[in-house]
Length: 244
Image (cartoon, rainbow, N blue to C red):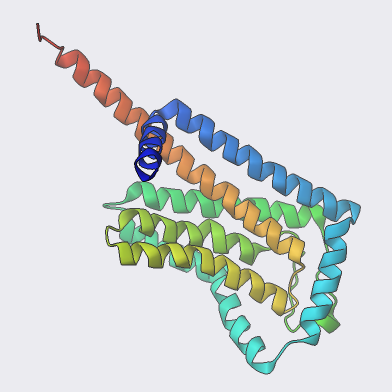
């Protein structure tokens, strides 16, 4: 069974090394995430079930906050501030530019694209933040989607995933993969805990970040595969098979 699974995975890997099947796969993933975001936005606008969950959760968390929890999640929330993320991104891009340019460009594309979507999403929906009496932080911009949740995926999770791909050590691979999941969960929950956002805001922020992460990886993955395919075709033309 293990050999059969390994054989299937190898076939899938080879299939995805072809640029066009890879593009179809990425396109399907992007359409799926876009449909999730669209459905979530529609529920928020129509004040359906997710909005009722939003109201219940923000009240429940406000009633169960502790002083330690407030301090802890204010610190984790700071990591998701766009100002800090821009500084970290600049440092990472400078470090990667000479030897990992595609990774640097993927991070820049994901961060910039997702932040634009969040900015216009906030302006378009204009959703109010949770009531001040239920919040321990004061935010001036709109609530939907969450910028912190977006950054936690579009920048931090994507960055850890790129480290996961670039690392050979199994132990480090597990660490980077764990951090890619933990960062969005901790930052997203922190925004809920502090009363800065509703659950649907955080879910939308995660989804926007995921869409742009997939898109950025897909763009540069497709470029790499196209170049590889062209290089192989050129090699075949310059070294024709002369075996008899």
